[in-house]
Length: 462
Figure 1 (tube, one colour):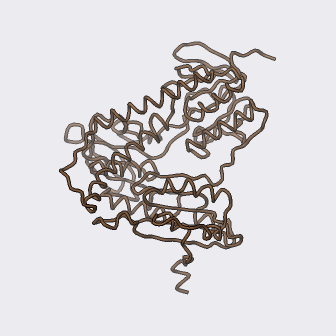
Figure 2 (cartoon, one colour):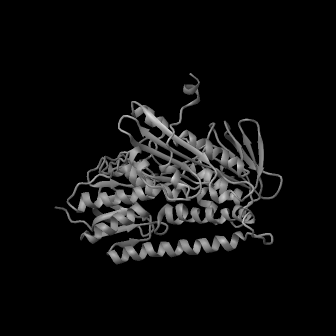
Figure 3 (cartoon, helix red, strand yellow):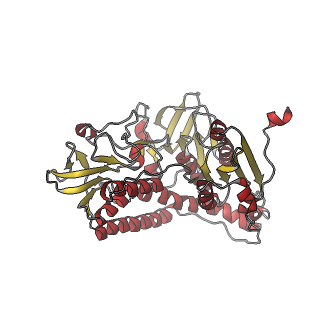
């Protein structure tokens, strides 16, 4: 058998790659991981973690207003972007350091370099200009913001990566996109006092989510002061008349003036220039690594996990895939991660929590579907001038009474959906939800007190 420098070489030190590498090393595999930026990946460095801090920061303006309804009075609050930004990055640096320390403590060699494949077992470290070999290779490089490369003036745009490092807070920002990243940042900047315009090519944001969630979030954007332009695309961008400003031309004929233009039109697997074709690894039309249920690529000793496979692009999923990879390759226990009923959140304001099938999916998969839906004003906002509303929705397979989907939009929805995800994953029935005692007064009690089935208007009219 050929001798290799490493039993496992991982490309990418994000959450999935780090977890897989650490566990493999703890099982005795000689392991190295290469990261061209710094440990932590998208989630820790330029994604979930700093974004959530920005969400927190942006919520305070609304909370200050709400506090007046509870008897609080104070002067005019002021937001200091630079102070917040630097504090946010200090915490990101701390977390990245923990990732690095955990790798070292597990016996993984961390190589701060870009790694590309020379062939099926050989990896070139670009900056060091040397090669190493590995018996097994794991691709965990994640994704990168999608660019509209044929867009005239694309050099005048930003991506989500850039928004964490702004020197100053923009006065007016135009965001292209209607997915969770676009919607989250639109409300973040609106909450920070920025004039925000969201340009989306379709009718309603958050394609792929339950329709009631989409409508609720769409209306929430407008309520937050975001100007939403639908059925529109960027046509070209040029420098504006004022220094540092841009003119955004839409295919509708509209022209928008802004000092920040953001492309948030999706993410693309970061496989470009990685040398995968030299190793014989198959990619799909989006550039994602094609893998089987065990994360094995077309080359039997090369695996891929996380966003680079474009399956379910969530950090906790990448971690679970990393665990399954380790069990399969170094644990003697062939393991596939079950991707059904994955709870997830969208940190809009109010936020989304969702798990299981949408109503549309359930009506395709089940012979008969019962829907329970409630929209109400949470108690916390009742003493304020403009209380937010909350939406909760249960999707039930009428054939076996199982709750196959739960969708929520409202404060604390992401926290609640984590626990509800256990119930849906376990296949609990609506009767079991109903038999659970409510915790009062909470918004979550609505999940166990909804009794009336929702009837679509067209059915009720008949």
